[in-house]
Length: 561
Ligand SMILES: Cc1cc2nc3c(=O)[nH]c(=O)nc-3n(C[C@H](O)[C@H](O)[C@H](O)COP(=O)(O)OP(=O)(O)OC[C@H]3O[C@@H](n4cnc5c(N)ncnc54)[C@H](O)[C@@H]3O)c2cc1C
Ligand code: SF4
Image (cartoon, rainbow, N blue to C red; front, side, top):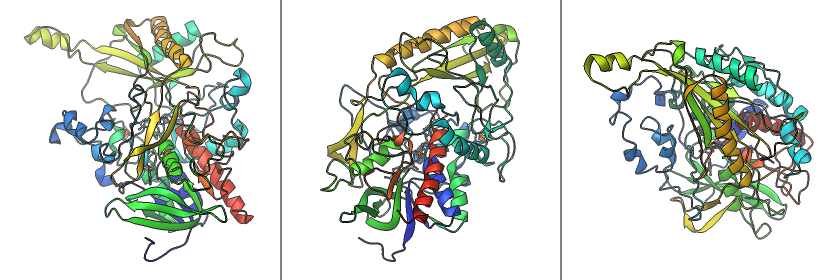
């Protein structure tokens, strides 16, 4: 059914998260008329609960089984809890399937303006040429169709706007950025950093995260209350709902259409052009059409590719823009099931229930398969670690009465680190439509096929072993390490299923995330990643989206879109 009052837009953007927010801001600020289709509800400061104590909640945030009734997958990651659960997809209404022997936890499926940036961990790291050209170096997979110098100015632009705290470290394989002052390390983090450098030559740094230490654009610096995943009234972390999307709406050129679940891209088959999007209004369950000159999908990797698969036409019978046949294949998502923890009892820090809570910890830069090293024998590519430290009461101390009270106050000063490793793009990790299952809106759902290979297994083992080695070098006590297969697979950093490339026979998108097959159709989320380096992806997603929007506008000016 066509919209009653038809408005003509220049561009439709599907999804208001990290990529969609930037696309809307860039295009609307340049004067284009943008329709932003967002499956979720509008976000508002009124929903933010970062200062609300758990005792005010009905179940004291202690009853995940209640949430499990509607969100059995989402609740597996702690950011979906009694405070935030209704920001997340209802897994029963919007399911997906997997083969029985390849379980996959597709978590972090948000249904709010801002998408995953509402609850993300905010770690923001640059890729480098070592990542973009890794195939030329080790012979596995494909190089990206762009280089570091192509994206560098966009990293600068995005970092200055979103605000990233960090320290320059001068590493070739983890380029420095436009940092706000870093949040100081704790005692145990400082000790760990110094000893790991001294004994193993590895770099431990304050985590580079999108939390402000200085005000920007009316957003206040972080006041260290802790739970950013519940929102932030001072807008001190980056969430596209109150930054990029708000800026786009403020121009008057962007219209946010909430509760709009995109079903498929509408095609003008004769002209081989996208002409709009068919979406389902989630409240009324009615189908609606919207038209524009250009369509940009920014719905998160699997969701965008699902839309393309659901947009098959007689000409593109295996999915829209899929003349290469690679759409849906080469799914990657970081492995992160190796790491360790240790205690530093000698430091004498005092635990407190009212102390400031740092919303970020440390990052350990990759140290395998670097430029001047011989190739590491056990696996290709590499991994970094995210880490955090804490000084806690000894809640589990034995005894009663005075003895317990005394033992309780013995501080537990810890560091824990978790590896984040690159997963090689493999053809047999893929998504397709499940022919037998639809969501409540009548839209066919995905079947996800994902498992680890030999390379990932060897890397996970090394994450555990190297964690132990570094904690030992730092003098930690009670060291515990782990390295177990990452089954069921999950990660929150999925990428690669509509990959970019120079060769249209082997890729879906060109270097500007424009489909090779249909000029006025773009996909600007991580599905375009040619590989998925171990650094967290979102800074690169946002920088690429801005770069691609600049290209899109230059093509529009030339009248070639
Ligand atoms: C708990 C958690 C921690 C994370 N930590 C980090 C981190 O530390 N560093 C990092 O780099 N990344 C992190 N990530 C990943 C990061 O959040 C994502 O990479 C990023 O948000 C992806 O951006 P996007 O634009 O592709 O999708 P999203 O930000 O997820 O936005 C997609 C939007 O599209 C909407 N949508 C989906 N389908 C449709 C449809 N059919 N029609 C209309 N709208 C639709 C969704 O409702 C959503 O709002 C984390 C993610 C989670 C969940
Ligand atoms: S820790 Fe900082 S960024 Fe996070 S919610 Fe609190 S004030 Fe906001």
